[in-house]
Image 1: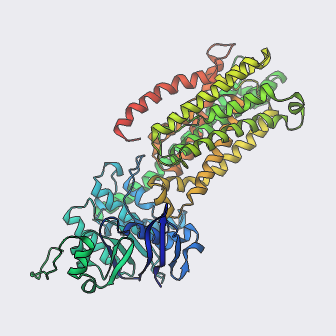
Image 2 (image 1 turned 60 degrees about the vertical axis):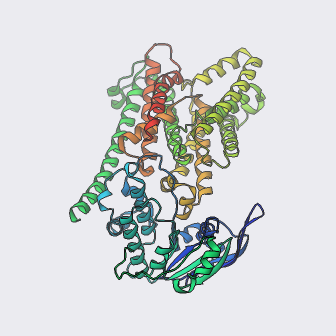
Image 3 (image 1 turned 30 degrees about the horizontal axis):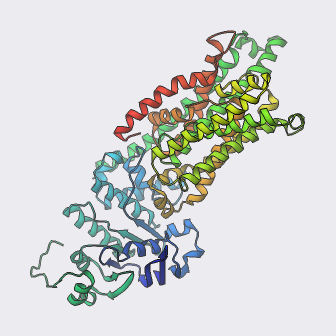
Length: 257
Length: 348
């Protein structure tokens, strides 16, 4: 049970963006995708999301090739958050979050939606924004609302034993330190509840602190993957990033992150 | 925490109730204007007499054969322009999209003009005759929409300006073609053509109306299930796909039904500008932006507005008539200007 890519190649206009990329995301784990700009992190995320069909290789959701899954079925397995476009019309925060609801809007579901919505909004600490117009929010606040929408998309009835996956492309951009930590806390909590989380991160410190597994990419290939201790080797990082990187253990027992 | 949760729930229920109430009032308004419009005009028919069944034969004839088809046509045209405007503005994520501005109405007019001037008499007299004008209108509208689709690379977000510039170009091209057709037309054809470019609901018969009713209602019903996808596409095409929306299917559904509804409308009543632009904005101001409310509200408001505007067109200069397109443009164009000024604030 997982989301995985198997030997995926992606070429656009004969430029190879990804080569022989295989990654796997298991339920309940946080996988951080790291690497320098242009390493193919976002492309890989988009391949896993199904936005891009790979030139070669396959993507599987729970052992099913996504080529055989319809668009709506895919939406039930995973939700994605990435850089979002501005909203043209004046929707409320509530409207935006409910856009993640995949289970119909008839009378029977209205109460379920209401409960799920309350829970999600509370979880993401945006209850105070519920009545606001989305376009009056700051960039960071909008990001948190979109995050709540992505979470609501993964809603399952308590009785369900299905697995869900969350793909996040740089979710921390535009967030101040407080909200950075609080969003990572929510992400961690989701993983504890059994959601598999793939997160594209720039900050290696945060990746080391929060991820169960690290996938280090460079030039469209996986350089190494494994636990933070296995992947973060100063020689490897120095050669990938082209700047000298030294690793040190945090001397304080209480750290910021 | 508890308090804010409670507030949230409250606004939700209130939001839906308010929208249902507005929708209900709009329907009443449409029905009311339909009754007033069918009983008023240069020929007096009293409502009371009509209900009591004591109307003269002439009065019933006027109502059944002249006023009623006219009111139904104006309602249908208003509804299809309002609905198409709302759906196109949603699909393009562009508050200035309007069947008229982006050239769709001009395409429909060109299609119909070609049929009026060029088509041989036997086609018009044959059994497909009543369908010929609506069909030509629909093909013209669909042609323009397809052209727009190609030029904007699948309606990608090329920006408001680009779409409007293409619309201007399309309008100009259709204008030239209609001009040429006007030049080679006979006197009688010319009269029909002029009446077309200004728009009118006069002279409609049940014969012409019936196919249009089928096409327009069919197109509107086909459009209706798209309301949720139209909300989701506001997040962007990729995001909508990730939320399970078949974006290609949505575009096809909205564009085809808008082309059919607008095409058939223009074919029967000529070019009536600005209704598709103004009506959805007014509906949004009244009750909000979610398409579940906006689509039916725009259709109903469009119908009510068009019935009233047509009544105005008949009553102001009795016994003559003002072209309806003149009235809607007179109201709509200042509104358009005002919208452009509002664009600075980026809130619709």
